[in-house]
Length: 497
Image 1 (tube, rainbow, N blue to C red):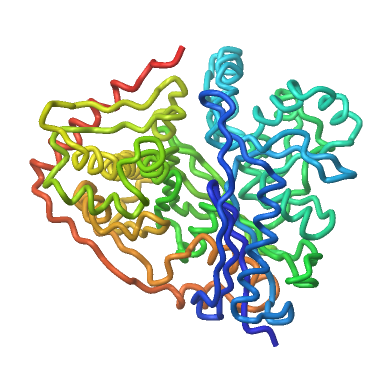
Image 2 (image 1 turned 120 degrees about the vertical axis):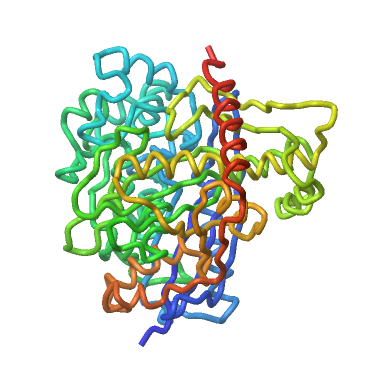
């Protein structure tokens, strides 16, 4: 009887393979980064073949750490950076172009063109998809590849090319040809009808994408095929969830009103809204939360922030102010406050709740007094300010007051950030005992599909709190800081032509 469950966590900057035991504890883990490719300003790409190699490597390494055999794993789940788009040859598996990453803004002109076509503007497809027109989603990225890679449009029309987000590409590679995705990833393409959970003919026609390219839409928890890779040969691939949806499952947010915030490359707040989609009037996204087996889908409201942890990496790699990302807390603690400095990280425009593709990053409030400690503090505070804006929008849309914010992701190890988050929100912030909630959610989905876990009650019982932060800031200080942040945000608007 297998004792463990595995998860591939394919993120924006790295790929991991994690093995969990039945209680959700990490047994082994391996991680490898992959190259970030920036061909032009605003363009962000990954090499899909490099991601596939890294996936191979981390699976082998994690299995070898504990001398695990394929029979030790009940199943494997996949979680992934979501909207990132891959198009590859059906026969050879060779990508026709690099993966276009979710942060990429090359389709900004197409967004404007599509928005001008109707009086609904950016909301042209929102009623059907839950999404505004934005550079973020997969449909326009796919259209760009078909229109700009020589021969791609003709090959796609002939049925020779396949499209997928990273989950689809990896599943196809791992299983030797299963061309599938789950409802959560499909809901981020802007090609799926949220109500029917199927590809929509009207949307396909509008974006000029052949349906024969698209994967079959499945549940988030079912067996899609068996792995053909030696280290995990024969193990069922049985769970797929986009990374933020996986974190929602990993945080056991199965009841309407329960929410989590993931602090990773970007920052993503999801609230479970139950079996009915809730339309947003305050700049949020309506998305599929998860679909477990034959049970009805659950939906979520999401607030997507493009840049959070990536801003710390920028401070490290582009400015050289810190040697490693963890050093930012030490640098930020050299000052008692932000010194009046605010950093709006609109590197690829602003996502929720503004959806302004023409915004660009700004640093405001600089004086001779400001030093690198103030800049480091402003970098951390930017994530907390953006989260507050999303929380407030979510409460207005859902009518639910958020009492506790469950957190996960790499930045939750930063105590200064977590305390400031509690202070600026004026709400309790909690960190779970198991911090690898994204990978854990994918493992949970796979485990439910094969009976390794009996029910979601078992998953809820696994969840426990590691640390809690209570707000301590005076209301006058909170109001002043947030007012200045909102002023700084307006300075980022209408920058790109």
